[in-house]
Amino acid sequence: MAQPSVQGRFIWEGLMTEDPAGATAFYSKVVGWRTEPWAADPTYTIFAAKSGPVAGMSRLTDALREQGVQGHWLGFIGADDVDAMVASAEKLGARVIRPASDIDQVGRFAILADPQGAAFALFKPLQSSAPKGVPKPGEFSWQELATTDDQEAFKFYGGLFGWQLMERTDMGAMGFYLIFGSDGVQRGGMYQLSPPALGPHWLPYASVADADKAAAATTKAGGRVLNGPMNVPGGGRIAQLADPSGVAFAVHAMGKSTAAPPPPKPAARKVARKAVKKKAAAKKATRKATKKATKKVTRKPTRKPAKKKVGRKKVAARRASSARQSVRPAAKKAKRAAGKARRKKSRRKK
Image (cartoon, rainbow, N blue to C red; front, side, top):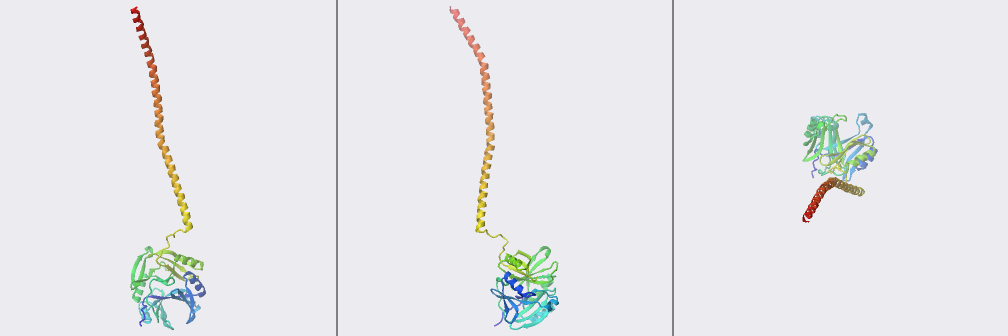
């Protein structure tokens, strides 16, 4: 039965470190991997997620350190024919670091550096499986290339593996983020280093349930948070980290953003309800005070006219009093005149 093609797929990751024991403890706390020695070579450690093996770890030897090699993660990219791919890579400007060779009962591999200097491996396993769907926790979900020339790097990998440019994201002053993939599946991204302090390199992203918790666990376990945690397009969240030996790697929580605050806990809800009640009471008191103040304001105009009315009555009373006083003398005169007329009339009769 024919084996499924692995061409252009990231199918394995290898960690080279000066402290395997420390790395074992660290990655089990941060990513949740379990470890076990490889049966064919106990000096090589297998990292496994719940779904199965995902990576391997070997010690950085003194001889490699003398050559200037530092601890690092190395991505193994599938090649249906390793030797043919090595030849094609050299024609495209790659440099061979380790010639193609066989691993007993495993497959064939070679290690190269791309034209800008980033290291990667070609790998043809003896047994291959069909491409997986959405990465599960502990599996690798993304690969990112930081390079000194993103355009040339994309031409190299596109020519070698047939990767296609699936998306081009403008990052402003940092340039563009090139998302590549094949067969309609996004496999990773490339961007230009500015400045190229660490040199060209591939950075693997392991899938985790919560990137923020992984970042916190990194600090507690003696590592460092290099960047993030932060949201990424699509609703995911990432953090770029370094293990205690300084080896960079990253985590990716897929499909869920934790930027929004979580719903309040029961105790918090009670406090919130109390706060709402206090706020409502304050609003009620404010309304009462406003209503009372409004009544006072509206009463003042009515009182002033009342005072004016009282003043008018007094004026009217005074005028009536003065009128009565002016009428009384006239009435007396009329009464005296009427009395004189009656007396004259009575005298005439006599």
